[in-house]
Image (cartoon, rainbow, N blue to C red):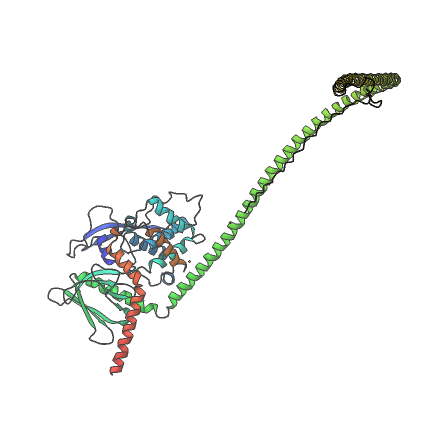
Length: 554
């Protein structure tokens, strides 16, 4: 952080220059302050105005416990957010999305779909450029994912959203670490990291995983000396043994002093955090707790009032809607009443007309009844006459039928007589012919007999000579019919889970070739389960082991 601060303020030279005085104006949320400042040996740009950043020099271990005042929390939130966006603190993509959602909540409050419509984050800087370039995702896709997380934070205040942001950021590997380029006594280039937990030695190309760490509780003494011929040397005494010494140096005396100041300040804060708070700090924390409790009660009261107001507004809207509905119903009822009155008048007129028509119909009915009686009498007379006529017609028909039957019987008798006559004539002819044949044969057989010598009983009469001929009947044939038959037959803990979900969602769009060395190292540490806490646990275990070994040797 100090190196970044030096770059911002133009600390590029340690040569003393002529003092330069310029005016400084500080703008805060409550007031503005203006004063003059004299710069002795910093290289200040000539253009104006010059932007200076006032940053926190020491980072807290636990932001939730140590940041007592709300204004301190807000300013520290802005500082950490800016460092993450400028990539001075490495942040994984999934954590970047979640942090961006808390930053949006801290600025806009609760999510409201009627107010926060798509595109409301188009002008906001929420993600590091490294994360944006790492995935094949448009700005709309990033906004959609950030908004989805933002909607889940409903009910939190802006201060709570800022604190959630800091609680996630303080677990990042580069959070609160000030890096300095150093060389050990062999001349190897290394990076020294100073933070609230201790000192760390890094490779120049790996700022995430330290080669070794020295917790503040194991460091006995830190000193530097500028008596060397060419450069100053910092001496680090750690552990129980006097031989546990680590020497390193920097080419700039001012950087050595800055390292020493950061070490002393962080070590003092580290030890102070592990002691009982002073009365002043306890009073400040008590006041802060009371203030937070008061604000919480105030928020609850405002929430209740807001809820009551919303309920009252809903009840008012419901009453207004009901009133409008009743007015519409009353208007419709009035219209129906008018229509009913008009209909009643029409029905009265129709009833009067119907009554008159009924009288006319009754009169006509009486006339019709009289006419019907007359017609009935006439009909009775006509029926009697018609009955007599029908009886006479029936008798005449019976007589005609009898005469027709008699005529037909007589005709049949005549026909039968004709047939009998024809048969008799034929029989007579056959008898004559037969007699002639017999007579002729008798003459030829007995010529000596006299004609009257025939027996007296041999006589033929026409009545006895008759022949009957009968026809034979035809035989009847019988036939049988055969019948046929057919048949047929028959279907996910809350924060980690949220980060894993975000990582899973955007992992498919990730471009491996754009990963930076820090991204690769972070992924390796994640797969191996390496973190700041695990490194310190390893150091603590190794320290305890060395202490036991020393005691045993004694």
